[in-house]
Each structure stands twice: as structure tokens, then as C-alpha cells.
Image 1 (cartoon, one colour):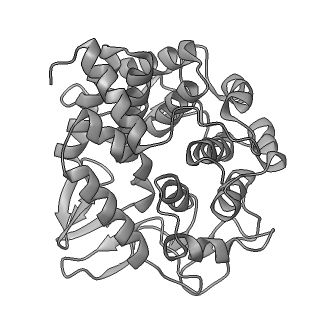
Image 2 (spheres, rainbow, N blue to C red):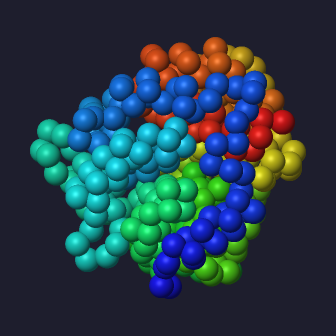
Length: 344
């Protein structure tokens, strides 16, 4: 696709038709641009590296993508460029336009060369949004390159459906695929279809939402962090991880809601599980107890979002001011999702 200023403007208009504007504004929730300076000052290094303070200060492709997304939503283009430039310089693969998922400040280099598909999707999504919003062709081109790589290298036919593989290597063994449903960044797919037009994006979204409906286990009927899918369509929590609805899977209802999958059918099971104000940090999907400690304020922000459409300021602010990187990030994303869905 040969991009011109005119095609960028046309694509921007098309994006407005498939998703709420970049800053939809929500009167009854805290805006991302209000939360952003605190988040940036706590978690974004001067060089653009987003730091996971709950995990020895390492950096992830996921965190870089979230940082770019949030910086763009707040209109902080200096921070956006710093985060993108660091990501491109330190995480990009040499052999394919994907990004390594883990960088360690102790060694100053990538310590696991595999990618994570949600990180690649988040980076491409943030680039597409920023490119169209600022009319920067270089960002749109980078978004297209990443989107094409995700489509060609990270999707496969699994039990008759188009599935997103969690990474380039290591997630298919003896014809059984391991899927992480929290890697389906549902609200990103419409944007990726704009920079890389293909029916696969809608198919991937619909198939992922259907998998999230089917992969339900335990007393609350919740999906696991990691899901094993057999060739005959049988599904079960993947054996190499605890059978829990835990720190990964909490993102599933956030992304479903953000993309408009907000019916009781899609979200009711999460609303029920999180109904108590002291809901646990994770739920077991087999026999045994749930977590003995409460969910973080970031997770509570998601629970409020899918129930009332507006996470409360007295949950968002403590998450961003006092929580670790992950809790603060979930709170920020919940606030942005509320803005872009219009905070009904």
C-alpha cells in the first residue's frame, strides 16, 4: 500500500467509523490525560523504557505497547516517541518484524528471544492510532509492517478456527495448541484491519470471542490463563500452568468490553465472580482454595468497568499512585476503555 497524506486522512475517517474517537471524553470517570503524568513519572524511564516494578524492573513488549497506547491517548507525543524509539531499538527481531518480549535491566539486553503476540498487537495498534491521529506516515507504515507479521506468523488453524498463537515458537506440541485468551486484544483488530486490510482480523476477533465463551471452567465458569485446545475441539486448562483465572485472564473481560462484546453472555460470568468487594486476586478452576488476598485496584477497575461502565476515581487513583506497574496499567486501560466506549 502506497501511503499519501490523502490516504492517511481517509484511513483516519474510516477508523472513526469503527471505533470511538481518540479522546471520547467521559464526564463521570477519571480521564487518562489526568492519570497519565503520574503513571509516566512512576513507570516510564527517561529513555522510553516502561518498567515492570513488580518484576525486578524488567521491560516487556506488552508494557511498551501499553505505554505507547496511553501516551498517545494522553496526547503526550514526546513520551510516545521515546517509548517507540526504545522499543524499536531494543526489542525488534533481526529476522522478522516482531518484538522480543522480555528485556532485563540487569544485563541490559533481551533475555528471552521469543516474542509475545499481545505485545506485537499492542505495538501495532498504538502505532496505527498515533499515525492516523498525527498524520505521520512513518508510524502508519510501521503499524502495517507489524500487523502483517502478526497475521502471517502468529495465527493458525486450530480445531477448525482461526486462532492467535501466543508466540512464534513453543505453543504447539503433539497437535495440541496452547492459547492465551488474554492475548486477544479485541479492540485493536479493527485498527489493524485499516492498515492491513484482511478478513482475517474480523475472523480472529469472532473466533476469539467464541473461544472465551466456550473455555469456561470451575464453579464460576471462568477461562484459564492458559488454555489447551485439542484437534477435536476439546479444551482444558493447559497442564504446564496452574489451572486458574488469574493475572493474565483478568484482561479478557477488559478487551471484550472495549471491543463491544458487552452482553451478559460475554461478561456475566466475570461480573458474578467479582461481585464481592473483597473478591480474590485469582480463582482456582479445579479443587482447592482461591487466592487468600484481594484483587488489586487495577483488577477492581476492570470489574467496575464491565459492571457500571465507569471505573471509580477512588479505585483508579490509588492504583496509579501506589500500585505496581501491572495494577496501574490495568487501571489506566480501564479508564481509557471507559472513555472510548462513552461511559454510558
